[in-house]
Image (tube, rainbow, N blue to C red):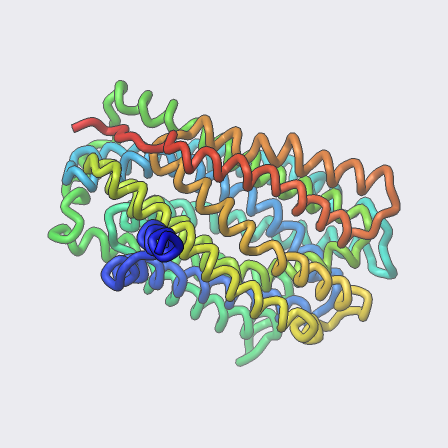
Length: 469
C-alpha cells in the first residue's frame, strides 16, 4: 500500500493530466514545427552545399559557427526584456509590453552595429582559426575563400533577422506561437527553392554555388520579417500592445535600467556560451579538416532532433513565466516539474531515432569515407547524451523564468568556460586522443552541471514575481 501511495505521489508530481498536455502541446507544437522545418531545410541546404565539395561545406560550416555567436547575442540581448514581457502579459499590462518591445529594438540595434564591425574587420582572421589543423587532403585556402564569400553576403541578413526575433519573441511571450511558425515555414520554403535554383543554376539562373546559398538565406529572412511584422500590425485586437508602439521609441529610464541589469547577465551568458561552443569547435578542428566537415554533418542532424527540447525550453519560459507573473507560485512549481520530465522523456525517444539513423545519413554527402565515419560517430555520441542536454536546457529556462539571470550566467556560460572548454583545450592540444573521445569527455563533464541544475530547481530559488502587482 505504501508503494502504491509513493507511485501515486510521483505520478501526481511529475505527470500531468490530459488538459495540461493539451495546453503544453498548443505552445510547443507550433514552435517545433517552425524550428523543425527551419532546421530541416537548413539540413537540405547543408546537403546541397555538401554535394559541391568538402571545402565548400567546411567554409560554410565555419561561418555558420561564427554567425551562431551573433544570433545567440541577439537572443540573449532581448531575452532579459522577454522575461518581463511574459510576466507583464500575465498581468495584462500592455504598456509594460510596449516598453520591453522598444527596449529590444535599442539593444538589438547596438548589437548589430558591433557585429558588423567585428565581421567586416576580423571575419577573415576568425575563419582562419578553424583552419589551423591538418588538411586531410583538402584545400585549406579554398575553404577559407568560400567562407569569406559566404560571410560577406550573409551580413545582409542581420536587419531582417533582428526584426523577426523582436516581433516573434514578443508574440510567443504573449502566447501567440502560430504566426511565427507560419512565417518560418514560408521563409524556409523560399530558402529551399532559391537554394536549388541558385546553388546549381537551374531555370536559366546563374550557378552561384556557395554564394547562391547565402543569397537564398538573405531573401528568406526578409520574407519572414515581412510576414511577422505585417500580421502583428494588422491585428491590433489580438496584439493590443502594438497600438502606438512607434509613437515613441523612448523607454523610461528607470525601466530601461531594470531591463538592462536584469538582462545583462543573459546577454553576457548567451554571448559567452556561444563563444564557448565556437571555442569547442575550434579545439575539435585541430584534428583536421575532416573533423570540421564531420562536425558540420553531425550538427546539422543534431539540430533537427534537438527541436523538441528547444521548444520545451520556450514552453517553460512561457508557462512558468506567466504563472510567476500572476503570483501562482505553487502552480508554477507543479507545472515546471511536469514540463522537465516531459522534455526528458520526449528527447529520449528523439535520441533513439537519431542513434538509429546515424550510420545512414552521412552517406548522402559528397565527401570522403573518413568524414562519413567521423560524422556517424559524432552523431552517436550526441544521441546518447541528448536526454542529459534536455534536462540541462529545461533547468536553465526554469531558473531564467524567475529572473535568476546571475544564477543562469554561472550555470551556463561560466560552466562552459571553466569546465567544458578546459577539457577540450587540454585534450586537443596536449594529447593524441581521437576527437570523438574528446567530445565524450566534454559531455561527461556536464554531469556536474546536471547535479547543480537539479539542486537549484529543487530548492525553488527561481520562484519569484519580478514585475510586482
